Amino acid sequence: MPSTPLSRRDVLQAGVSALAALPLAARAQAAWPSKPVRLVVPFAPGGSSEIVARAVAAEMAKTLGQNVFVENKPGAAGNIAMQEVANSTDEHTIILGHIGTLAVNPYIFPKLPYDANRDFAPITLVSKVPSLYVVHPDLPVKNIKEFVALAKAKPGQLNYGSAGNGSAGHLAMEYLKMVSNTFMLHVPYRGTGPMLTDLMAGRLQAASVGAPALLSFIKAGKLRCIGTGTGQRLPQLPDVPTVAEQGFAGFEMTQWYGLLAPRKWSPAHLAKLEAEAVKATRGALVKDKLAQETALAVGNSSAEFAQFIATEQKRWSQVIARAQIKPEGMG
Image (cartoon, rainbow, N blue to C red; front, side, top):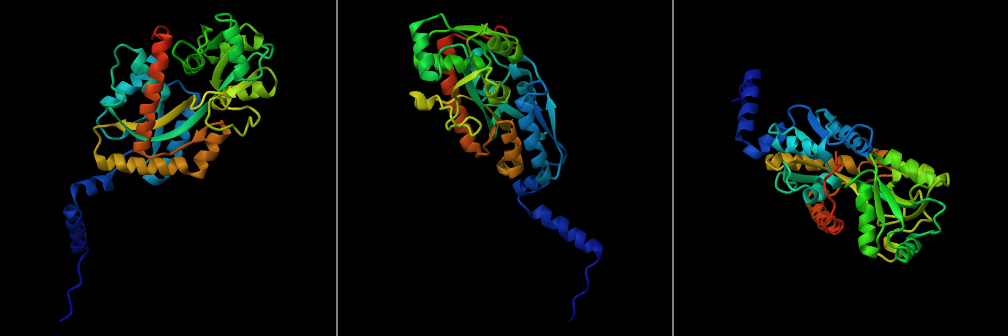
């Protein structure tokens, strides 16, 4: 006997019943995201952080089925944004973590409104921005070895500038001082721009800054690059050896950025976010966009990113303790 054709209502009802039969975790994953995803950047617009965030957000939106929009929320060295995202409950708000908010602030500030490890689930390390070590061309050194030798011959007589107390450049120079057992004077500025102006004018002798801000000055001969903080030489500066190559094995100094979500999210949502973020970061478009800014795309797993954060926390807690860096002047 032939079967009776199903009506449209019967088909819809069968679909609803099938969805209801799925495990709760599977249904949650299928439903996420149900609205646009907000990616918070804890710094002012215009820097490397925004470039990284917008590059990966645009690619994630293509496969998530929802827009991923970037919102800059600067203040208190990133602590304001970190606190807000840690407390968010809609499971559609994520944050661009950074060497400062994850590996520096926990050891500089006596009390934070968030716990970098307890409150956040690492998703993926998106990018590393190489730090370069540069000197004024009149300083009679051509590499890190000669720079360290001069610093040891003249303890306390060399100075270096940074964008401010506790900045990446400050930490980079203190890290070099620690591993080389040298002593130099720190001159903090309010931003990279005025510091570079004084460095190129000869009022400072050395600094460490992210590659995007320095390459044009190095190419023009206004600054001399004596070492890179990366694990391998940069294609843009193939003749400049890494610091590690110059007698300091394991040395690495990069500014890095990664995605995190509140740890209280459902495991299914975290897993989907990780899959899409890794796919986007490893894609050719993101790699090319970041390469234009002398940044390296990564896209590792959440477990690998968590281990990376732990390693960076160990490294910078030692540097901060040795240099006795305090939060005064950090904004």
